[in-house]
Length: 214
Image 1 (cartoon, one colour):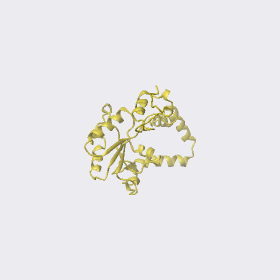
Image 2 (cartoon, helix red, strand yellow; image 1 turned 180 degrees about the horizontal axis):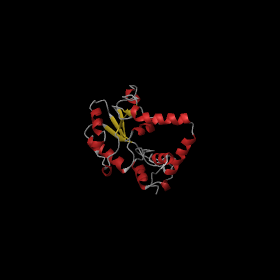
Image 3 (cartoon, helix red, strand yellow; image 1 turned 90 degrees about the horizontal axis):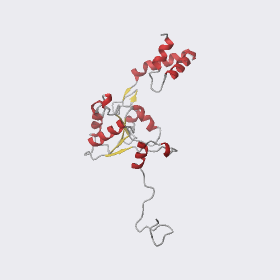
Image 4 (spheres, helix red, strand yellow; image 1 turned 30 degrees about the vertical axis):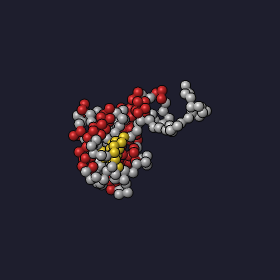
């Protein structure tokens, strides 16, 4: 196997990269500027040496604690629980959350050998002992494993007095109900929001006698 084929084989192991995409990337690297390729190789080789997990939240960072945990302007009474460090960036991009984070490092999945002990749940409990936290927002993925993990955390902390919420999930904006799967529709129904609350003594418009409309 020549170096090109070896590179293609290695690149194809990356998430979301199939053999065809891997071969395109490899050929692009062959034609690219040599200095750019050398810089890329150096950055990859230094990645695991310079990047580590934040000692507080578990996110990826060069300096620990990370920028978010070191920012005293953020609301420390809120902790958003996510599965992986990359999930933090997704939430940060919304600009709607100013609290703290806690990375579990995965989800409960017996088939993959992942139990509660393999996750950073114990570290989460240690953070809660400070008494500064009033609400946990569970932002695990809407999968069977994600839901199982969320339920485990809720049961573990049900006597804590904390407010525990979960990200709403359901039909995406612009989505078509016809093509939604059953689980998505079910979660949309359960997470529905009230648009109008009936008032006491309500009378239907155009029905002064308040007779049944149907």
